[in-house]
Length: 72
Image (cartoon, rainbow, N blue to C red; front, top):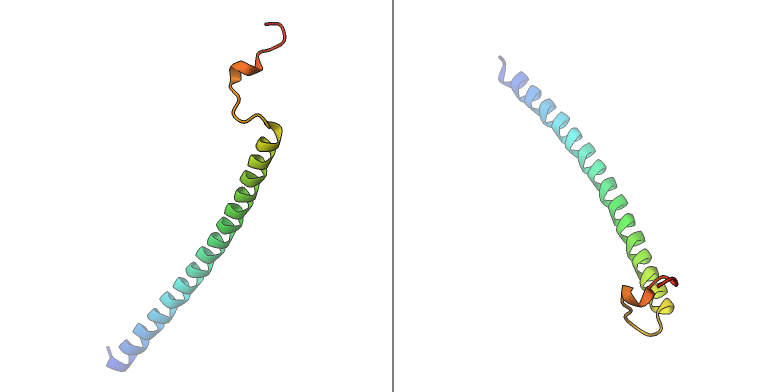
């Protein structure tokens, strides 16, 4: 095989691999962005749940025994 043709073939192979790698990096970036959005949403939900729990229990910690059904 001609050395010039070999170099051209190898260069083409590298370009194809670089293209696939670039595509994969973009896909992974999209996954990371979605995960970050999900993390931020979950953090907001946790903050809201903590706020609601604090507002609902002004007396502090309550045991489940304190919440017996009325028929006991």
